[in-house]
Image 1 (cartoon, rainbow, N blue to C red):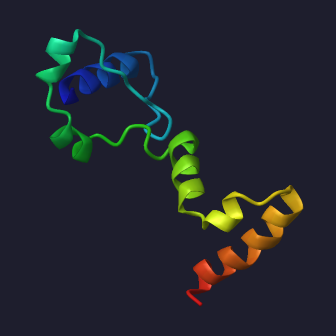
Image 2 (spheres, one colour):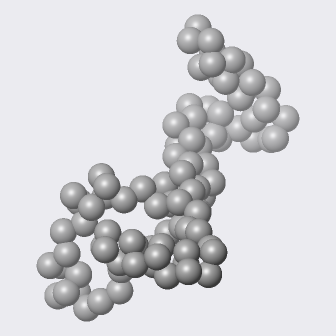
Length: 93
């Protein structure tokens, strides 16, 4: 996988383009048998493409919010609960 990404980077650089690591994602396509042979777990620690994207980071932050904030009935209540939570988190109170 690393070699494929390196090849894509080289190919894009020829046209003066760059991969945006914050937004780039990849998908592995193959039969179940072929995909079962691919060990993705060591690769996950080395490949970080896409995990800083808004799609990934936003989902992660949403799930880190306390349940009462996530399930607020209105936007007004959500904002009212979110502000003190963020202040406590920012100032470690």
